[in-house]
Every structure is written in structure tokens, then in C-alpha cells.
Image 1 (spheres, rainbow, N blue to C red):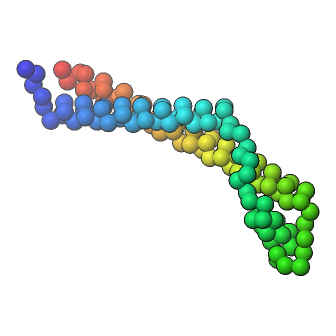
Image 2: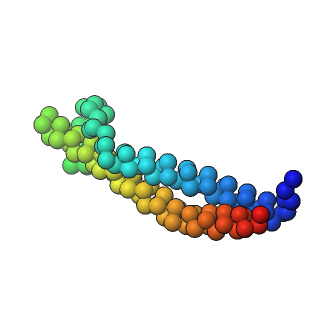
Image 3: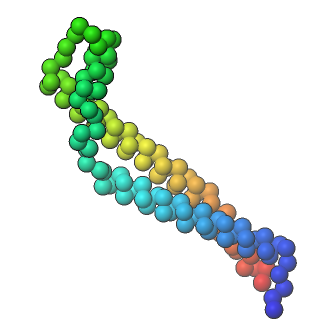
Length: 122
């Protein structure tokens, strides 16, 4: 039977937790990279025509009464909003990639140190 000291248990336990964090961050990083490389198509029909018309009137004129816009303007507005939504989603995915890469840059050396120390305590 091996001699398990508190120090050895600590280093093995911290190594396990850090390894699990590494696996989680690598999985999240890969998922976000897949989301970036395979962009979802622009979703058709997310905006209701009447809601988009009211929003366009409000943004353009500051009111929704006694003014009108053409259906082409509304469709252009819908397309613009959907592209903006896709752009924001892409930006968010890149933020998550950077965050996970930074976590890995911090966690990997900590894991390596704790694992190395745990192995030398044998």
C-alpha cells in the first residue's frame, strides 16, 4: 500500500481539478471555433413584418403615427438587423475563444507544475 500524505493528496487533487478545467476549456474552445467557421445561415422570419415596420418608423422618425415606409425599406431593415445579429454572434464567439485561450494559458502551466510535483512525491 502506498503512503498517502496530505501533501500528495493535495497535489493529485489539484491536478485532477486542473485537468478537468483544461478539458472543459478545450471542448468549449473547439465548439466556439466550429461555430465561427460554420456560421449559421441568416434566419428568415425572425422579425415579424409589423414589428419591424414599427421599429423602423421609431428609429427613422421617432414616432409610429402619421408616417409610412415602403415594404422595400422594411425588408432592407429586416435584412440589416439579421446581419447585425449574425455579426454580434460572431463577435461573441471570438470573445469566448480568446477567453478560453487565456484560461488555458494560465491553467496548463499550473496543471503541469502540480502534476510534476505529485509524481515526484512517489
